[in-house]
Length: 218
Image (cartoon, rainbow, N blue to C red; front, side, top):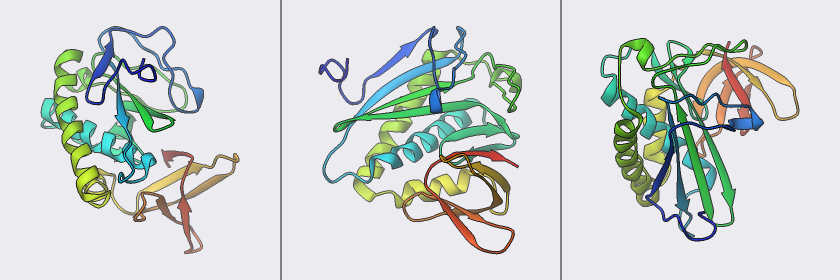
């Protein structure tokens, strides 16, 4: 739809449920009615920061929106590059796909339900006492995303990166990373570089810079 010009920047599409929802690396995304499944389009401009850093824009906007509806959330934290956790349990996921000068951003957020997965903990807002309808949450998210997108365009990645670091798990958190080639790396969270790459401090004291891969709390 976006490629055909039917979706302009700033418009969000929301599904009540998905029959073929998917996450990063082709993973299936369980999509029962009651959760948020929404997508929007960003039309890239020549002066924009690197398109991949839109993941951080989306992450800080989502974290901010969750705090509006769950103001007393404990353990709410971002995990590189754009997962949102509560007490280490996954609350949401994002998928960014680029086609030419267009990036389609898809967000799945567990509002009313969360799946029981073998490889990671999951949770929902309902599990923490917050009842919010998907359309109401999307209004909050869309406003915040537009605001952070404007800052990303006007001020660059720096303020977005700073906000992400303020809302992430603490420096020194133990992380396990799986690289695109299948290798595993375990280290301590050491922040982000200026371009948003993950920095890990390894056991031998060296620093590993990670641009792509899967990350879990160790």
